[in-house]
Image (cartoon, rainbow, N blue to C red; front, side, top):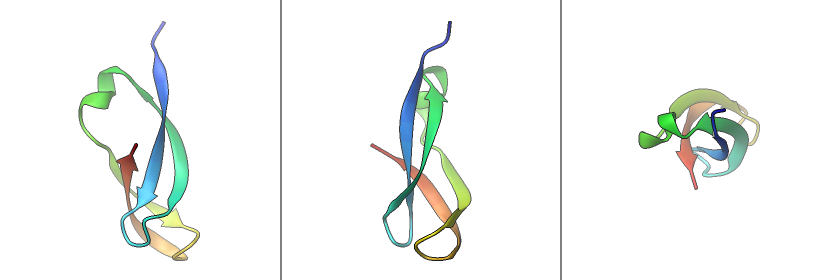
Length: 51
C-alpha cells in the first residue's frame, strides 16, 4: 500500500493556492511544477508545489 500526501500547488504569478494534488512519498524528492489555469489571474501560469 503506497502512502500519499496532500500537496498544495501555488501560482507563481499571484502566489495564491489554486490546486491540491496527491503525491506519493517516492515522488516527494523533487518539487513539481506544472502549467495550470489560475482562476485568480484568469490565464495559464506555472504552478509550483508549496508546503
